[in-house]
Length: 395
Ligand code: GLU
Image (cartoon, rainbow, N blue to C red; front, side):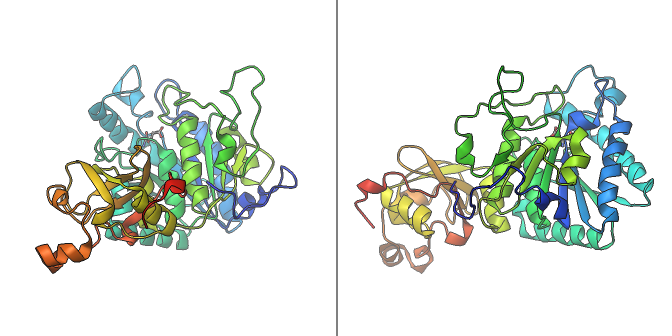
């Protein structure tokens, strides 16, 4: 990812006011910050967090909460002795926990005369235009009505294939959906370190201006027994949001007041890209691929370098079984996935078309075949620099 739109900071303080000044902010709280080790909600911590968010609302700012903790708070009431790893039990726990979680948020905000609203979403909702628009309209209306939306993944219905699993990615997509000016990720870790916390000499990284800066940083997955994310998914969420132009602050839930006040805490991921379309964001980060189209170097360059549609002439081979309309990965011949897009043909139709120009196909098979394999509007480029450019032999 490039540093194009960003100039180097003068001091570490640059950027934090973006969070305190944001008139619309999305705040995500992780499971370990909202629940106790006994598998029940930690109402005290929820109330403390609500106090900070209510203060923000009192200043006339709009707040959207993304709350984890449904599964973790279903553990106690169900008498389970550990975090469920099988999907059905996790979904059952989430169904139990989500009710309690929502009631805690509602009661917390009611202490401040504020109304909270539950919004449950799946990854699929970000890819279906009608669902996406409806969710956007609902959230917008809730905010106009001065309600605090509390969003979570709809764990009870999301299947393994479409499940996001962690709420970090969900929070980034929600921040994009509501056009938030800042995203705050609160967890049990106070910042991103240059080595796993606990490692001797590990230092906080206060500002991230480009993800290239993190090339040598070693991160871990879930750090607590109840959270499903860990630092890896936080960085991924920060990549999604900052890459779409939204600044992201990573801090611990205990630092929520300081984080929201723009004080020098946590790690700030500064915006490193422009807003993308919702379809591109879903394609790149929330859809799951049903197959792979392997492209020659010319096609990689056309798609990644020039943002062109993908034509049959540039496809070398295909893998997997998919139907027209499915998301598929586009890879270079060395296996690097360079883009993802919605394919216009079934996998059974494609072998006959590979390497042919659209004009030849129209003559041979009829005008219905004179179309792109993937239209540029249905493509999300994942790698800007086309690999093997220096060996380019075909336009
Ligand atoms: N939707 C999950 C829950 O509420 C998220 C789990 C997590 O991100 O830790 O339990």
